[in-house]
Length: 461
Ligand code: ARG
Image (tube, rainbow, N blue to C red; front, side, top):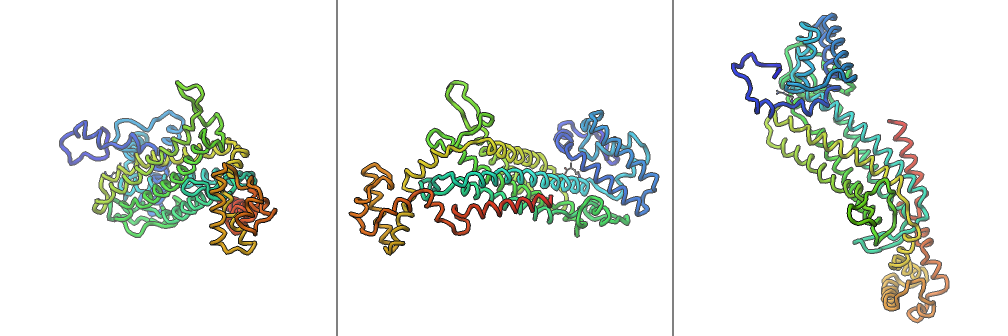
């Protein structure tokens, strides 16, 4: 194996040990970040007079060429190297010779991998924010379009009170808005540069760490070099943020699965986001939603795994930290796919307004409104609650809806009922009367706020 060390060794590494130790198989995806970090480092070294301008220019040209060859496919980031850092340095030396050997002056792979990973995660955060914004745009258009799509709202999965599809999706808009805000604040906090921390104790060269940090778009250089090489908190926090995103996607998936079921029939998933059965010809299964729900466990696993990896590590760098990559990369890929798929699924599904509305009418979801009607007629709420409760029981026995029960039967129980009851318990007025902030009757305001939020967020991207 071509490696960056070996002077103090008298034996080759055991083959199984070398395979076990190598990370090129998965840290190859840090290649663009590794080149970017190296370029900034070299520019700083030359500015500080540690390298000559000629050496700097040769190294920069060499790195640019390597990157170009990798991008064109002429060179593959693979081979018998310990990791991506070894690959780039060996390739540079192979191409430009002596000056290439100076690239690693005042640097360790410990601060190198720390900066690579941070750059990678920063890009990922930005990418995920864009995808979330796209999903929120889709949800906002559902909120705008479905304000008269009445449906039952549930508690304990029992019909509770009438809402609209716009209101229901408005709740998800808020969840993803919190996710976005979480990512925004995380990005700000994690934007600190570890490069220049060296192996753990800085270096004896007069590095200008703030300069390198600025070249790489960081707000500052980290305060403590031991922390610089051993901090993975930002990654843990990012994974945690993805766990919450996935939890939201999973709850939404669960609802889509229920609503798409033969029992609910509230929605129809588009054929392009469903699959069939190999044996049952009639089946159209919500596999994509089920997979999003399922993959949530996988992202939680990555987050928990890294917490456990980190919990016993003494300062500073330990090789255990190489384990921060594979599962994290997988979690990031998974979460991004799930956001995109949810977006596509929501864009293409149709609401069965008639079924949703009939369901809201059928389950006594308007019982609270009937009690509120009596309150408006002067009956104390607790008495009204009892009266309506007994009428619900009566309807269940007669197998009819509240709006089907004749006024005479209402009046037998309470004189306060009048003809205007039927209007008061219609779905339309149950919803329209709920105009307190955040309620289903106040959705036009919520839609306005959602759109303003998206406009503002998009202008800052
Ligand atoms: N592949 C290593 C990692 O991902 C790079 C850092 C190696 N440093 C070292 N001292 N062995 O963590």
